[in-house]
Image (cartoon, rainbow, N blue to C red):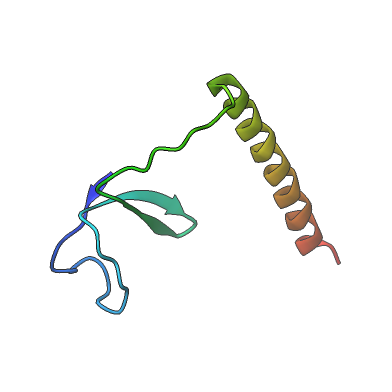
Length: 77
């Protein structure tokens, strides 16, 4: 997690980014800034943590397989 400069010195003034904290994720050759809200929003989820983790892993595998197929298509002649 990073602290966002209130003067916007590290973020272009053209980008409307109003927050005090953000998550900084590597994204290819650059970074992705994800704003973190001051207040969290609670939601009710009927699934267990184990079920949610399993779903997340399955989704990640699907996306990874799709990405590999797309990369292979990109390099085919």
